[in-house]
Length: 285
Image (cartoon, rainbow, N blue to C red; front, side):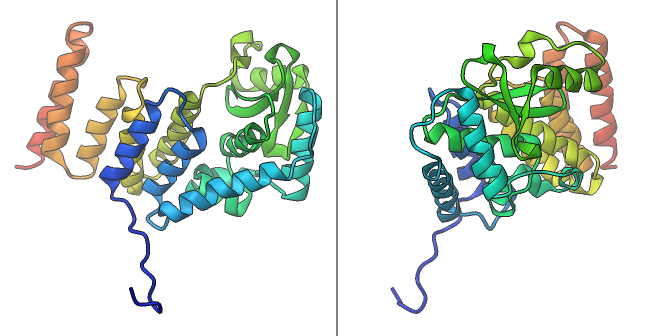
């Protein structure tokens, strides 16, 4: 090997990345950080295996900077807010909703800016490595973190630098988004795969507002379909995206496959989907 030109690690191909993602998603205890980083590697060709390792090491190092001997949910929430919110400046703003990189963990670690759910992933992964009793809370429209026993409702908002959230804060937030009262089910700890699916949903929503980014919408749907549990309708969404991107035959074929699945329960909907498939094929004439 030429010492002046050290070999660079090869960037895994998309099929390999998707295979790794699917394998991790089916693991007995899926690694949330790794799933988010594999997602980031699909989105960002510059992220290779070394970059993924570096991001994991950064999370380890941040965890190592937490004080030793912390006990209790409130103390952990305070320690994380001081480290990540105050010392390192992890937080978010409305502008972050307009940027795809706000949904990519390696970019969030670099910029210290991101969507509430990605900032929460940073908090969860740093706290977990330090032995904290931490979990994600998927409130409607806003993701936060909890510490200790969920019944204690020790919540913090990483998007706001780790500001403590009272039960009343959570109730007002939910009421503002849904118009409904807070339901206890909303405070149940979110599982890693639920968090990843919600991240992918955010990316799909970002792409849906930008018709020129069908490529982003497609890989986000493809990764969602690799999760063991996902909405069946995503298969139809994928077919529509294929048609939008000019892949009329593939899109039409996938629409027809989905129509066959739907036919048993919703024959009228199935026929409407088949009509769209025929219209897609007609675009080739």
